[in-house]
Length: 528
Image (cartoon, rainbow, N blue to C red):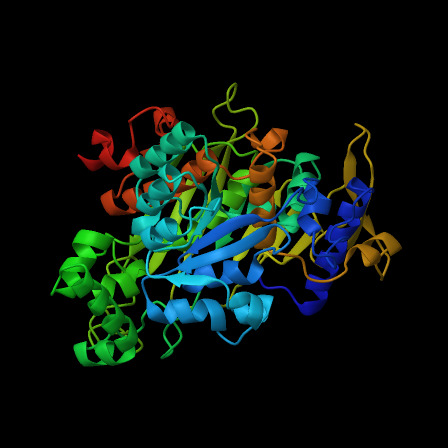
């Protein structure tokens, strides 16, 4: 949805106006300037006692983001581990940008120098029995194994999304966590994003009316050289060796220490990666990654599920293909040579139950998702279309609200300022306004950028550890525990199956039961 800067500004004012009315005691972003936004907003409080001693396993792209966002008041990083030398250095030095600082900048060189660096999680666990918890951000194919090893070693686990490479692995992780009586959290950070929580509150209060459609997308353009971090253009053997020489040399030495002369054999048999290429470029292959639905779509399916009351989907169907990356010169002039296996364009449709689906099977909400590699005209985010209003979530950092025009409540649309009043049913309702400026409440509510939720999810993880909280999310426990993470994984991984087998797949209740062995990847109705 293309909006002018003025319309976007108006939409943000409208959102803050609505929040200031529905949450008079706590305006959106009101605590954004303080380091404990999560503690203030989600009311889990400051940490009692010493910070939790933590090990970080995986310090690549996402791991370095988490290192930058980690809360030192709650979390004491003892050690980091990564198979790749470049990532171990990255943990300390960062990328020289505002996304991945590095621990030297985050903590200061003196404090960062005390953090030990290891090649893998087994070395880290053996050297530091004092560690209480781990944060895992390794390639997807190793999420389950690393998490299970850490749980069995007596550590609480926060693992990045997607929870695991298969639903079977998700169930095993949950079962091991229960057996070991350890917390298992999954890093879908929108559960700790203040903006999303406020948006969801507006939806629950009925301001958007009936929601029958949510559109989500994450569009990028990789047709320009160097535009895709997921290895555009491929590598020749010579260029690959040159680019990753430090990692190759370090892992070759590690292999020889372990009695292997062949690096790829060592990686496959001991570390779970089929080859050096698939360790470095794991997102591009089916046996190491989960494609666009796992890496991007899972976040937005999670958001849609939150907005719809965390309900399970009814069914999904769609198309995915390798429509852009291929053999140079065979496709369009912009096409890039690449041997990746995962789709570069995906288009999925999901059916979710509405609030009265139990009585009326026509009460269905449709969620569409697309991720493409050849156009970035629209920013990533979600648009919620309700009968009374439209909510736009832009790049996890902005929310815009617009009223639907009606005979009863007046004008609406992207150029109309709104205000909130008490409806005849006692619930807040949207109304149009001729005002040319925001109200005082809306203006003061907008105090700048809000956190994406990484810091808050780590704060709460540590808070639950220190206070021995094992409750469900509605009672103050982890907001994205293993069961929720598995639900998100089921939605994403079943999408891949729907695209692969060209089928409409109906979700089964037993897939969502951690104690039931049934999973979509072996379901005969899907794979036959």
